[in-house]
Length: 442
Ligand code: GDP
Ligand code: MG
Image 1 (cartoon, rainbow, N blue to C red):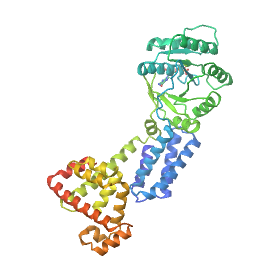
Image 2: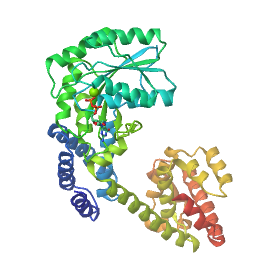
Image 3: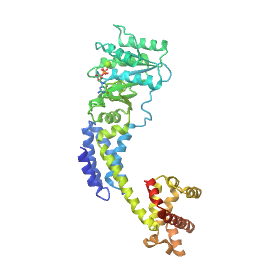
Image 4: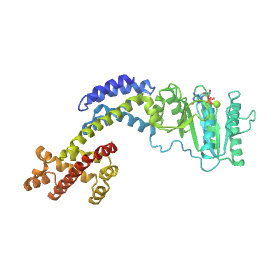
């Protein structure tokens, strides 16, 4: 898959600008990649449409390597979709003790394991006192399973009383959590192989008697598209505050994550990465995004290519500077670079020996707007004038300033800055300072 994608993007990078057709071709591949990663069809379709809108719009404004741009847009959009507006997925709402956390999901999805993993995390990281209770009255030994894990991680479990219903156990857990001074109590429910009404009904009753602060849906990350239906059903009937994707240590491509997020709008909070008790991590959109598209290597490649490109440009410029060549075109490039790198102040701050200039710049109020206007002034010059600004006569200066909608004094300021910088470049070039400076800028 990566090969196919990189082929498409290679072709793209060889062209100057990005046409609608190019974007379409690339996105067809992206769509296949999504489907192969088990993203559901409507979600993939919708996602590609969004990327297409962004890509075609952006390509007109920027001319730098279009293929790279598409990769970046796809990647960013993926991360954006996965992350939603959840600031810190790993932060559970467990104020006002004892805070109930309800764990729901299909049988074998990893509820019991995740319950214990989370309890351990709350205990170790947040210093919380946690009580775990198994409400699984269906499967023999399910309660013992949680008890054994509890002993293993040093977290209390509610004593097992045979013959109770899940709701009765939930009530007892609530009482015990209050009396015992626990910060959190976790309710590990029974699952079924498929969603059925009894299961949902049970979970709803438990919800009603405990009023959970968090209801986490545990989903097997390998189940793919199916997972979305499960999530939708659970959310409709019980109300879910977050999703935990398990078995993300497996071969699955993580497409379920995207589908789930897109369809239910529920944040993915944690991912399970193994059977061990510490194999639970806060959900990181970037990681899953890389995995879904299988483009991690391409993204890295793209970044490297971009760096090389910039380094080559810098090298060329450096050679010119060392020869004392610094014309208006160079200045313009520098100014554009400045905007890219967070304004004049930011750039100067990165250069050694430029503290004084930085101060001047700050005093002159050189923000992006000013820089943009300076670029406009340079654009109003003829080719000859840009190469050799000394030839500018008063009448031409007036015309240029007018053309850019500014005063002659603005142009004079720009010319003065150019002279100062050219001077400085020359001096620095001689001292070998340039190389160091460029090195830092990259
Ligand atoms: P439950 O029926 O939903 O309670 O599922 P369990 O917690 O009993 O887990 C079922 C199986 O999946 C067990 O063998 C777990 O060790 C395993 N499991 C759970 N989470 C993960 C995970 O993140 N990665 C892997 N590889 N196995 C997991
Ligand atoms: Mg279980």
